[in-house]
Length: 570
Image (cartoon, rainbow, N blue to C red; front, side, top):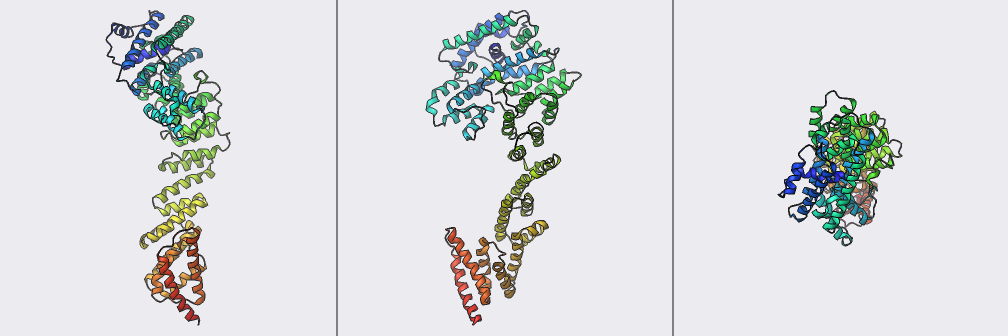
């Protein structure tokens, strides 16, 4: 459908480019396309398009000012204008609508440098476009393509280890003179030959369909006749917006579209309301209503639109066939929409649960993928949502992330609460360890305040918190010089195994004043303390860590204490 390939570029030039060419041909052609085309023979249009296009190509090829962004933006403008200007007409039959869509699709596919880059990428990387890749470079490459950052995409390709095999190919694609129709030309004659073949195809198509009123109107639209745009039905607009958004690489000016629609549409049908919902970006309502009104293939495309996922099938003509629904779009949806922070998480879950719930493991994937980009302030909303749809068993993952968030901020009262609520034993142990390390450095008043604010149920479940409470009392006895009470608690730490082994060194360090003040233990109690000391030393041996200097000091004091205990025994 290369008519749009010809006329589309001209529309782009008329609306987008203030050319420096002053040739009579260019002036005549630009003037020609500002007049009504109702009485013009389409073959004349094709002929003028051909000449103007060739003039522009030669200008671009010799220009030093052309950039990736400027070159591709000439083509974006055409589709923007087409979407913005569509309006009323009696409801078209599907074939007419599909024809227009294919023509617009052809324009974009043949004028986007990204398409050539993707084709080349797949050729040299030897990976199908649809396969989900774990390769970081491949992911980054397609992200650059989708967001229009072609220079960044080029940089990624240049780093590829096999770059030498496609270096010339890459440079040819990125050359401004090679961007016509997304193909590579080694000479002007090669381009002219290809362009003339397209022109003949366009003329042949026009002759075959020339008696069809709707097709003639389509040709006028593609030739830039604004009045023909304004005669179209909103149904056309709705499908065209959806389809153009699905196509790779388009810029969508939703605010201008919404303004024009509101100004021109009188009484609104349900379809009109849905369309306004789309351009108004109320995506939750769009998904809900569209799921009721449209078949699965349409919803699949809508999914891609919401995520602005412009990855293309290798064969554009197969866009509506062989979609392998729902598995393919499920994975596409997960990988694209979940990472789009503009789409509320409950929309994502609603869509997948209602349309793709038959897949094994769907609930686990929903939660885990959602949390990759779920803002913390939305956690409570998400927990409520999960409860409302009967997914209470899945909320433990949310609790885990809440715990990690609070623990990262040293908010241990909340962090420990959510860690224990998650029922994740590994997370609970990690939270307790972090709190234990924090307690060593924290001043006593603040630590007591934190412990008071910890949920009583958590305090009852956590042996580590119970130990920290006892340890705080022990420190108070040491500071107050209550040697007898402190000695009893010291023995209990090791005898009842209240203290974690990796905390033994801290206990011995804190107990030095106690021994220096003349603490005397019974022989049996001293053996308990000595056993704790041996465990501490063995831990360093097992972990192959050097013993800290404080160990020598501790051993010396324990030796003195041992002599006192032996004397007591004697």
